[in-house]
Length: 247
Image (cartoon, rainbow, N blue to C red; front, side, top):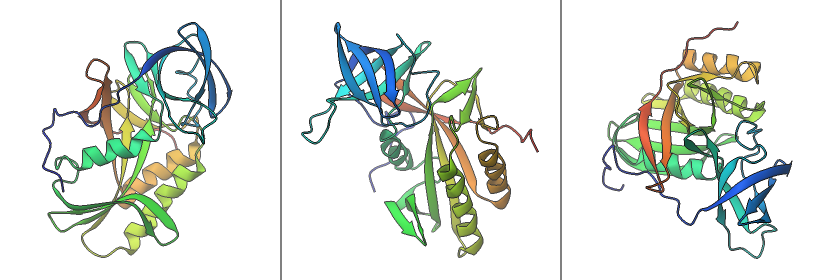
């Protein structure tokens, strides 16, 4: 494993970004962005609705992509919300989570081993880690870009896949050997002070979320913000989870 990072150290950096003005989104994976007075087609990696971020004339940050296989030459990376730049490129979630895990601090302590994309049964989970406390931890990662009045909410669109991951972790935990933990890292990518699953968008996910907590699955909403001057993400701590309000 890498040496333990300090709490204040950047997680990852993203360089080479270009400012643009979002115009429209013809489909889930494509957007039209004005860059230096001309229009560019930009790939949107996150298929979520993102209505509070990707709306006409909102500022965004895009990154050039060099690939002959790609139909578009740009990736959508950030969108503006107030004074913040919110990550809208879900491919970075894994790298942020791995950088956080390698810190050796909360929530799992110093790690002896970390493996990504590990198959277990019929599933493939984001990480399997081994701690110095001789614990095995299975981890799934979710990115959360939606926040309302300081409350982070996930998902922003119905997610059968997200609900299934929670169910798989509950099953895995119930059948696991001693010293096995199952957890979800929710990467909260905005200035929020608490987290709540989004009942209005996906009631099934909402109820499964609290069932998972009750069964012993650990869920950590990790606040991670992007500093445009540093061109880097920093970890700001773990947010509290609101108590269940809907039956």
